[in-house]
Length: 492
Image (cartoon, rainbow, N blue to C red; front, top):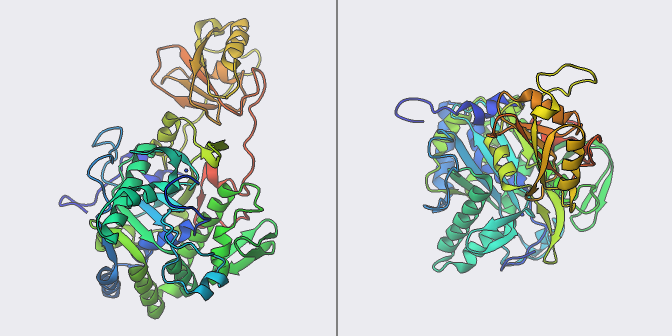
């Protein structure tokens, strides 16, 4: 809240409108993003009553604080006024066995991981000022990004690198780790991170037990001895040790880490549904258990006001909570490590810039013989190669020139999974002519010269006259299109 009243999101960022083994500390198959959402769960339960504010004070009295927000390297690339006053939270699940007995480590199939500080579960959450909605974007642990001061590496190693280079107490070093992670995420997404919340493994286990488990729906039976996952197909309620196995499994899933991310999103959604249900909202004992667990399990940055968060999030509907994953991540092997290679920086930042907005209508491809506002000879096409196939831009430019376009190869772009046609505002007809030659290509608006279209070839490109390759199904499509917290369709 501000002195002038509720803060508001600019339309292009308001979620209400719509719908990356290196590093100084060893990595494991860490716990789920689901546990990190506990940082905001208390706010969802505080519905403005005197009891709610009492619970908020209980949480505030017990929660740990960290100097997590960096003073540099955490800016919005579009300027100080671009992001408005919405709240951007980085929610982190810490791969820590602190508090777990040897027996619990065996029961929960966590293994022994003394000293592990990798953040294997991360989400960036956009929350509008009035709390009517929220957009959760998963940041897969293996995403290959630039880590300030260290070069490129897996996203989940950024915290550990910051911790290892810092001096001082354990608390000071953990805060340094959080700041390095925030700088990494800000640089990657182009957004300023306002707040930070971290929760450990034991906190997630306890929280899942308090809410009585979550109902999930599996498209097929799965079994994985590494995580302890062993589930039949269909609808079932999962909690406790089974919940941890469910959100940690990646072996045996078609999409590996990306399918695991979808599971984490689905489990969070189920927890939110439970916590917003009438039964739980009327159970004051359960409410207090949840808030006490949140207070004892999470670490927040020094500036996150629980009372403000509660006011912003009250009354949120599950249908207005959207879960997504960065599109265009491609499995790759770099320096001997299995990673997820993101699309080009411009594509990633455009995704976060447009987060939560309804996609613009793509220009329809003209049918044969249809009279368009422009002819191919009036359209200049720059063909840029991001497909990874040598010579693809030159070949495509020649084919377009043979079709009457003014076309030329224009070098290479960073590797991207998605073929994209870019055009300036008002040049829909020119873009449609090119789109008709590359069925299925994405179409976006860009700042280009008049009557100029940029065709960026991606890994899905199959040639002029051929439809691009459709993305492999992930079980529910959440990675690309998003799913809401009330979506109960089956997943892998």
